[in-house]
Length: 182
Image (cartoon, rainbow, N blue to C red; front, side, top):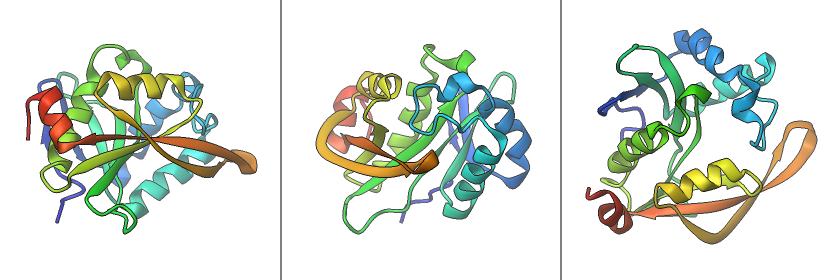
């Protein structure tokens, strides 16, 4: 059984369980509208919307704070979902975001590598659901070796809008080839 809230340490980042007292620090990051501009939940920068996102993360479990090892500050968050019955052998990694000042510098790849190495010790593959029109996240998935599958899902987002998501996967074998791990 996977520990969905491990402490994972990398060269520049540490991931640790998200705590209720992290609210202020994480919202300070999430309140930047630029982070959510291309995201299906584009209004997540607004305090009431993010408060619900944070509450859902705490209830669901598997939420991690992403910490900059140099500053000790929270710079984002990501989550391991509970394994789904419809996808035996896989676990979802998602709900991820980073402070805009950390974009394009390899931090996304570092925290995803840490999470993938942990997940793929227990599962054959990790999946990532990305809004079909979220170009930035789709490019980021491709940059870390995510393979677009034929699977899609549709979720209701703010204002009752239905948003189609595509599913990327990274298998244990693919991760080992791309990252030299597992």
